[in-house]
Image 1: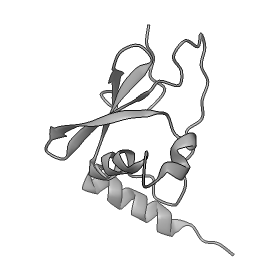
Image 2: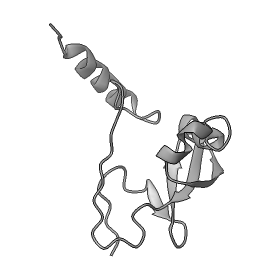
Image 3: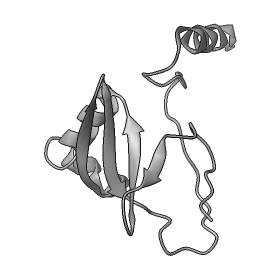
Image 4: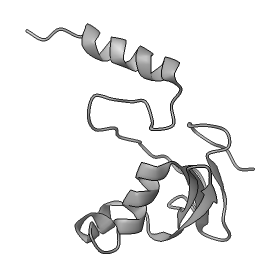
Length: 108
């Protein structure tokens, strides 16, 4: 049985043994396309990328290594960097909500 810890229900699908297919927008697809050459210094910090499939309408699928493949009870942590947690494909409502949260914090 496959279980998904988070994200959108249709964000990940199997792409064969040891690989997954992740639905991404233009910016993330562009990043993965550049990962093996322009951003090669980051390649060891990301799952191996086997390519990007363009699905049209600004949607893409990244075929990547399934880091949990073969593990019985995998445990992982998804770390976000920065102040924005809304994805590039977030609805205007979600983006607005995140902006309000971002500016509601006061630092002394």
